[in-house]
Image (cartoon, rainbow, N blue to C red):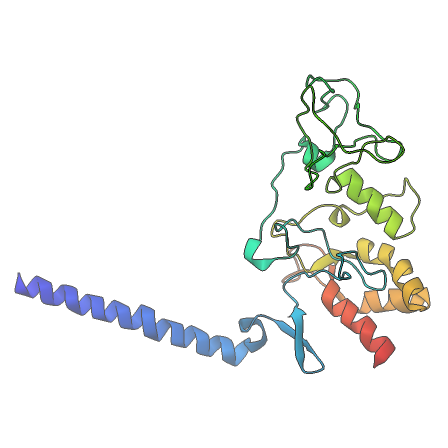
Length: 261
């Protein structure tokens, strides 16, 4: 019994030392020696202060939360009430027919004013035929399962106010913000959330479509801004994984440096 107790105590001490002291010190030491920047969060500094991390997306908005036209904008984020909140990382994981993703699509998921399946979308507006209406509460929550007697928020012209977080509504907002034609194709990463909700990169196509708006806002020549996009393209991970992309934070910092030095 004593022998078994001593063996157990010895193993406990050994494992504690190896896994609790030696292993953390070795891995920390190797990380600091060879990948110090990544080990410390890939922080990005400007003027001696930390302005973000190249691993995490962040918004470029005014105090009211409106996107600033002079900056490239990242992918949408659904990390709770605070966009790009690292503590709430995650995606919505909606199914392919969920109205919160694609809106109300006739023949797929439309529901009438009486709460029954419908062949048309009774909430369609001239701008958004897939409109998902919102209720009249202060939160203006989307109504995906209409019921008789449900009240909906409406615009002064009588059209329904649509949930702004569906793909169709994000596409409309993207086209409007970037001065595009109403039926212009929109990159999928511009209107959908990444798995983490914190993806720091956007596609090259997304960056190229935003470039004219940024150039106008900054009074720069479009070729200058497109050239900056090209110089900030990141290749595939390990040369084979994923697609090339553009880190929004580093691109916007490059823009600031170009104009202010």
